[in-house]
Image (cartoon, rainbow over all chains, first blue to last red; front, side, top):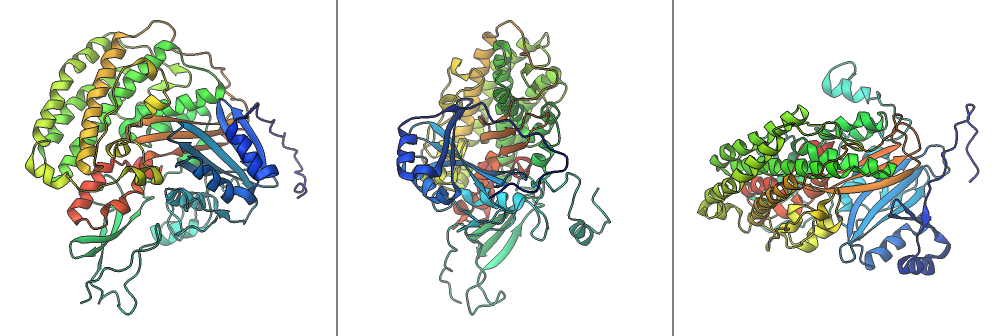
Length: 183
Length: 388
């Protein structure tokens, strides 16, 4: 997809991360299995990062789960509004047997559903509900996708960059708290 | 009335409505709300219980009553300004929160705190672990009905909070550490205070054990209650004493040492059955091990600077880092993304209480309502961390 309409006040581009390549039997097996869908295998601050194409996310998760990554530490997202794929989904995985940690990242466009990690790691249930609550990202195959921290009838997803720090769902505040505004 | 159990929802699915053909009034199952205002839910936690008589058929946790948007705030404060916010999440173990955050930012920046700062950090974090476990012990026993332990254990906690207050001015939300090390060096009587604490504490833990461990009532309320086996713990991402009580000897202080923990000798207490009684024993043993670490730390205090060189205008390089520590509740992690600016681009807190609380639903199925209280207490949650 081409870049979005140019910003009238040009925002300086974020320089790239100073990472180093990561090559080991696991990355070799991943590249062999998924080919060009493995976008990058990098080290940064001695941590392993694996960037994959979003179309292979479910298969890569299954591969990693079968290769000993039995503990899903966290699921979260980062919103980059200026990018072509504005949502960076992040899965932090850990293998008890190898004492190895790995971060899986994939970019997703607005409105597209992300494959849920609950078939492999049931603990992803609440973590994905929080990502849905905060960003509005839906997870395909999640057994119970609804808000977890905010009230059910809240509108808006606060961790998106366009949701200002002072913003609230005024309608909800007026209806449920009986006050004009929460600020 | 049809007493056959209703089919359970698909794993992780919503609590089912009454069975087809039965209205809510005819159903033999009752929906009972526990909380958010309840003395035994350890904060504003709402547990919606589906009961068949006194037995729990299913349970659902409703959280978010203490949600303050800490992660959003993190994107609008500088790294230094965010430091005090971190204390307010798990407010019972603020020092540990501060340790995790400061170390994560230091990792992002690429600096390491000096040796003296690291030993002091370990010392205060372990004091904090004891203090957090004391709160847990007192309140957990109180929920179950044992009213004496809380008074005895809070006496020790008073000593610890006095040490914190003399060091950094606050008892609970300490803001003890800074990015790069410490702000203040230790006060003059610090070593004497800590040594006196270490001398007295093991006997006090024995006192708590005398009150509870062999107590017939305590055992009837906790042995076999809320079993969580190791495989389920790993699948759900449960960490901390709950995981260790299930038999997995995994502690981030040993597997992924930070802040110089590799220089201290201590053991990881492990349980067998993964029930409430084992979690109680694991935490008691952890208190003893923490006391051991503190005694070693106070003897091994090196000299030297307490703060590494940090630029006045603090802008970590572009990058991202995930750093986790063994907080008293489990794995507390910070995932920080920096775009080279003054403020974090994304600051995610991986809260152990939030992830551990997911296990509640599986643990309470088939248990009595009274057991629900014991199980919630044994997970050791702090709602400030669950909701952030």
